[in-house]
Image (cartoon, rainbow, N blue to C red; front, side, top):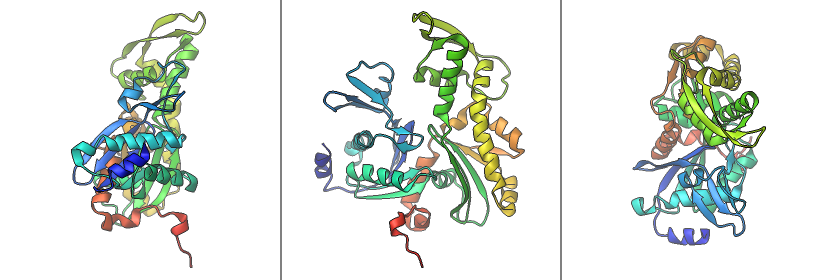
Length: 351
């Protein structure tokens, strides 16, 4: 399949930026903007290995497949856990844009967590190359987010970015086109969902799936007191009898379930501030913290972070898209931003 992909795109070439996320993958085509935003999920036939669905179609299968079909996320905590699945996922996502944009064998810029290892970086490069990319460039997610927000990262001033994704939270202080202080913790949206699952299991003796937990988080999730308590009916499996059961959960309960996870993120922000040079801290006091990523949309998160740090917190305009938009802008102005790209260690010379 992949050799066919390479042959198919031998004639045309273009440049794309990819936000390869644990929960969602976004693709930006140079000159076009974001052309794809789909869940990072793949479903395969376990007997034949054939890919049955990718993206939204595959996500609908999560938790609902029989033994012959495996639906899963091939990314966890911001890194690749299943190389072949990521390869097929990228192939499918890139293919979806062919008829619209007529490009192939693209130069591909991929945003990655700032703390990934060299082995993990190699896995990302290999996956993109196997999916048809002629050249693979890498950039740290906080840098891409800062560019996507519209921050001038070239200036000698401190900017703190807190990007809460599905698998990781990226915290970085950026100045003069470089990361001065960075923290990458594998605590983010997925851990929030797991906290909700565990709470319902412990308090109601009911088992719910990840998609149900995610829906609870979206509809009534919060970490700061709301003006009015919200309620939601939840269906799951009774752990005692094994029978289906419907319960009602409220926003006060979910707030208590989510707080331990959110406080891990807040503690990481505080540690990053402690390691930041005083002059840059002064800049952050003036400018505040920039909060991005899908997890930043959790109700009350910005208010709680503001209360805990005594700093202004700015929730960016496009929190889900800012990494992809920033990676796209870097691609559009590659000569200006080349210095922020991650260089393979084998290419770094020493004196």
